[in-house]
Image (cartoon, rainbow, N blue to C red; front, side, top):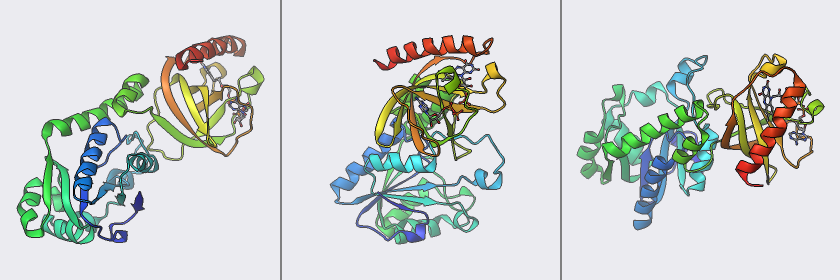
Length: 309
Ligand SMILES: Cc1cc2nc3c(=O)[nH]c(=O)nc-3n(C[C@H](O)[C@H](O)[C@H](O)COP(=O)(O)O)c2cc1C
Ligand SMILES: Nc1ncnc2c1ncn2[C@@H]1O[C@H](COP(=O)(O)OP(=O)(O)O)[C@@H](O)[C@H]1O
């Protein structure tokens, strides 16, 4: 898959089959749309193009706003779309010029001249151009003039897609990993760098890699203990993850940590990817590290059972 960070980097391709959207999570609903553009592209010997927007205008105007949380970072989204076999991903930053174009200018300059759109798969309610005045009717009206075909995604399908992104976020924030994964069609994951912690983990016999997430807007599931699988340097390990502020030791920060099974390497500063499979229990304030240690031993048994020895 080729990635473009500006529409001007893109050179028109043969029979571009295009769709536009945020695709947060690249979940089952999004996967249906991707299959659709792939089928259409296969049928006309064309290439699939996804136009997405990043950063979100709110992220630029209010960088301090902590409420914008997304299921996938822009890089994770690109990875997932690549795995689905999308040919081209155009990531457009929102700019005043871009959003000030009239609907017709946008269709002619961007969709037709810059992308070479032959077919566009678009939601019934998609808006574009100045003041979001453009819509499906403009596309339908101009399609015979510019020689492209419009394929509408009906309201019900769009609602399903919107509902599942929202429901996935809600499920993750309620620690309902299994439900989130069902909607996603793959296990929810985070990616980050292993950083130093307080080195208490190894003292109690459970070293934990502390994961730092680069992107502030990445949604982190609710606090608790999770059965996870971690990919590091081409190998997958089972493990038990902890998300929380470590009330037992009066921790001050919210940490994301993981104890990996059958693993003993030092991996500070290395990148790992952690897939969430099951929620095990909520965060608890224990009376000291000895009690915590007893509970973590039980957690390990539970996790091994859940993930299958
Ligand atoms: C499986 C697992 C479960 C944990 N459960 C709790 C918990 O219920 N309450 C708590 O305060 N800390 C819990 N912790 C976090 C430990 O307090 C933490 O790993 C320890 O403080 C080590 O921190 P460090 O990595 O900064 O050295 C848990 C950690 C693991 C790996
Ligand atoms: N089984 C393991 N699981 C997680 N990290 C491990 C493991 N074995 C060794 N390590 C290493 O030890 C570190 C965690 O040890 P810990 O005492 O908890 O220190 P810290 O507080 O710095 O995280 C990890 O970052 C990793 O480099």
